[in-house]
Length: 382
Image (cartoon, rainbow, N blue to C red):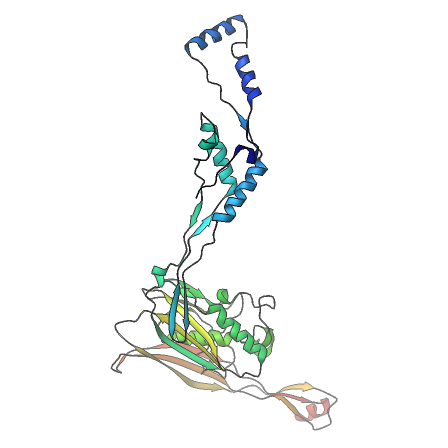
């Protein structure tokens, strides 16, 4: 692209008076002998006096700002979209960055080197741009063609704020591409769990209790992704179970997350790029891993075994003297703790077991019953 520059556009002018003064002073400096020597030298070695110039930097800056607006473009990675069983691709865009200060310096330096300065010559100056290559290209992802495997969990739609957080978490990870060897971080993908970042208040587990907190529901999305990762035999790098057993997944098959200190991470251990598909369909969270169809087809079965139960301690009493004598109101039911072991079984296309391993061994804490009563009833109860 050509962007013609005119001298008047940035007040370019030769400093003629300075050049004339320099020429006049040649052979006129120093004592008599120095002057004679200088004049004698000029007869043999003529001196070319460089014509200096001046310009309005603010005007030149404004001109280059206009050029920047026309040629600069942000870098964009290639992308993928999975919808209704169909995969579509978006090709990458190479980024172009135009550094104005750097190009002003180049223009001035190039002009200073030109012997015969005119508009034609300065318009031959090649401006510089920085090319920014995208991290993910179409060639990186073009082999993604099938859903390798998927997993789903169900939720109650009555809690609209929790449903909102689940949908938002799915949107944040949907169509994420992980190149071979790269590690995916759920914490990073979800971003800050704040009101400003779009999340709402809902129920979360904190200190072995169900309490209100921003982002309640993202753990269900994390758990669903964890199971999809296990079923596609990707490498789990970091995973932590909840302190309490959950209703939407069997013990040992959950994964919790807490911003900044508990993460779920996995590595793409395949030799091709993969992509995450995450969507809410009805009252289900559906998450799958997209990739390349492999020659050998395997099926993964996950099995959760409860090996022991842990009895809770005695009831937690809450004193409420507004209650009548003998009245007890249970505000939380007791729940046994659990020790669970999860095994992974790998079957080939003929249904033969070819591999098995223990995935995890987790302990979920018991929950004490909680009951309200007045102090007299409590003394009798004890």
